[in-house]
Amino acid sequence: MNKLSVISAFLGGVKNRYMQYHPNRSFRERVEIASKIPGVDGLELCYPADFEDPKQTVKLMNEFGLGVSGINVRTRREGKWLRGGLTSGDATERQEVLDEFKHAMDLAAEFGIRRVSTCPLNDGHDYVFELDFFDAYNYAEESFSRICEHDRSVRVCIEYKWNDPRARCLLGSAGETLSFCYAVGAENLGVTLDFGHAILSGERPAQSAVLLHRAGRLFYVHLNDNDRFWDWDMLPGAYNLPELIEFFYYLKRIGYTDDWFAYDVMAKEVEMIENFETVTWLTRRIESLAERIDDAEIAEILKKRNPAASMRYLYEKVFR
Image 1 (tube, one colour):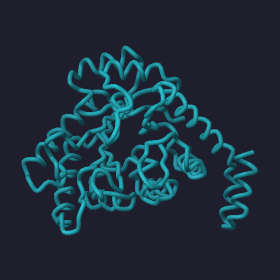
Image 2 (cartoon, one colour):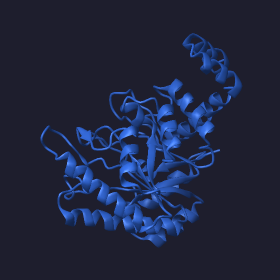
Image 3 (tube, one colour):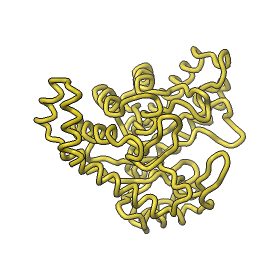
């Protein structure tokens, strides 16, 4: 069974462009909150915010008995890298990003987790004729190649997203990101499959999982949900329950069963612990629904490709 973690930033000053819903909290406060959420096994730590004092970070995680699912390297900063750091035309900026990744990878190795993840949100464009796509891909390939070669034992996971804050991010789908990984050619470069981001990109998340697994590039999974129009970071199963059941079923088939799920979920007006207790409860509940699917029975139905039979099976066997 996969362990459950929360991205640490979602336990602090949660806000959108218009409102702040929760107060800013210290790292210790966020760790303490995580320790009180039933079902949560650890945190996905954010770099650099959670590593002002790395020794203190380790101490607090041990003190509260929490594991680390990965280190989330933020490639956006206030007042710098405004055009994207990984694809910047300024070699100095690209080197700054590379240096930060190297440090984060060293910290990951010290934690023994061997995984860093990044969502290159600001690497993309807003307008036509704004970005030279040849340069962007060349700079991105160069950046990730140098990042990956720093420590081949640490997996580097790209979390793709269609948009925000760019109107179109450079890597916006599972297929685009997989193609990019092939172009880089580093065995330790793969993909973080965020359920909500896959939905936002118009994908069937189960299909994306199989696609990435077949290529050996499914490195990590984030859970959340949305209405297909915006990345709302909602409770798992709130909008796309059948897709999430199918997703869990295929994750079991491909063997993603002894790793981590990390939550990219926003509490907004709801009390933080109550919100994430529901998140973990929903995850285990929906996993149990997926467990009702019999491999032999569904295999026979899939051979026939009869959606009438599939829907009857779903509602008679799973939603009974």
